[in-house]
Image (tube, rainbow, N blue to C red; front, side, top):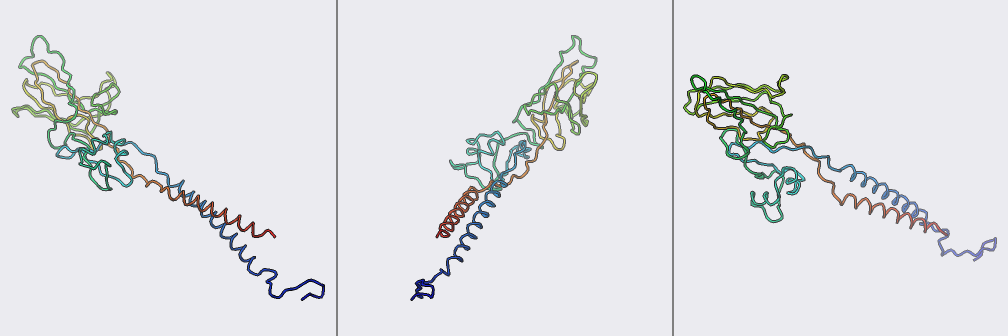
Length: 286
């Protein structure tokens, strides 16, 4: 059949195509949606990066001297090893873990043994006594002086450096083996402006004999040396004993590591959107 203008017309043909404009619009909308969704997934993946780690100090040992670490969400043995200084092999051996060092959040891991707050420990560096040489002639009555110090062990090596000052708020005590002599004082912080030396607690007129010096850690600190030291005081001696402590740092909970699937999914959605856009463009061509 021909139209009045001489153009052949076939009623069986669908001209112009009815479904093609709708299909084009659908493909364009789908490609745009996939592209925007992919960009959103990549943005979320970038924002989910974990926060920077802060410093960490080994927890205070319990009454039995054990140092325990509580596994946090996202922890693994390598991270704990870098954080605490305990090797992965020691973590596996101390906690009877498998060769893969499998751990779970909330699990208690034994890091080692340190100084107990209630018992006289043997682990850890001993406080370093400084004994002044005795005078040729003993003091009358056979007495001496004992000076005790709690210092801020900033580098945690158990040895006092020149810039490491006294810490206030702790307590030191001196007790004789026979129990007849016992004194205790609260520590003060800082350095003596005249000498540059830390402010020590000194006990004068201490009778000669066997003594035990001990220290109580101020709140917010962990010990870096043993908290008790036994020694013999000779007539005329001046004994200086230092106990090291270090500020406790509470680790902030780290945000969970981003899943790599989130970024991969974003890339795939973007590629899918580009593909749909190309198909729509080709369908628009005559």
